[in-house]
Picture (cartoon, rainbow, N blue to C red):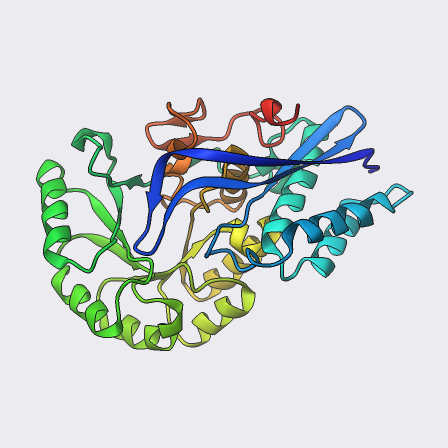
Length: 344
């Protein structure tokens, strides 16, 4: 394949709803779209490291992007996608956000050339439907949730969250809960929560303690009858291997923008499957391009559990046409799908 042109387009988007964690509130998302042009086809990828979260956020991202563009422009001959990916992996091991964007752009372009969805390019037996959990907010009406609800715990207040969950259970006793702490508990409080919420049909506690307390995760997993999921503690394949070796997690929460894209995510899932660790995908609050990339990655990897794909409402007033009742449908449009407005 010959890449005729490479465009870089910066963006800054005001989120329609502020996204709050126990430590920070996000109201804007900004980054770059990288666009590869080959003949009459264009492929697009998103590079948007998340402040105080992405491992490469404080690194010279734009400098690294321009370096990769320069390297690609130096290629004067036809080259295959393996060469392209080898070049990216060699230079971007410590820049997963940049790797995610350039990888997405390449495979969006290649799948458009073939006229097939991106997920199908990676795996002809991909899942054409994905399931998403609901996210609890005070503003939502109780009938706006499905049967898997994620609750962001922004304060160590057991009685408050028991009250919320009891209210939701009174409406539907079949609800399963996922509690995301974003590391707001210490070890003693995590043990207390594990005791207090037995019988609440909780699928898992997500990142109950901050990464600096990872050494205590093994003890928490051994004690807790509620499965322990980790999110912020997963930043690369080395951290994954350490968690597996230490028996420190029952569930991995995977964010491709953090990990580096499809191939990195695939390697992690294959390793997790060997050790019977469940994998859930979620977003890093990307715009629609990154959101779609996450969806196609999860579809190609045949993820069957409910994933954290309810963040579409951060950039769209109405459910997008490929979202039906919290389900995400992978249609037959080539590449990522609905991306024309980003390619102008």
